[in-house]
View 1 (cartoon, one colour):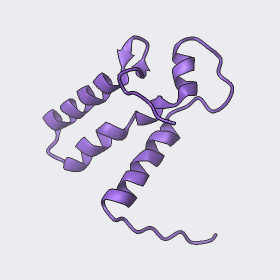
View 2: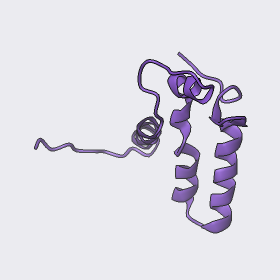
View 3: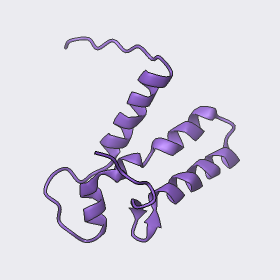
Length: 92
């Protein structure tokens, strides 16, 4: 299952791709942190969730329709794959 950033929205009438680019650009203007720039690209990427897209269109989707956890998960997977971050999970 794929998605097209040119067809996904962050807010009603605002393309997700444009929103992410604008936030990344703003991040570069207000900080020199590469990490902040990278995080800005991922902060709303979970909005590609088809259920979230339906919700933006005024529908009442069945299933998970939020984006925050998906955005965080996408960023975590990026770090693990691209930056070779090794995580150790301890049992409680």
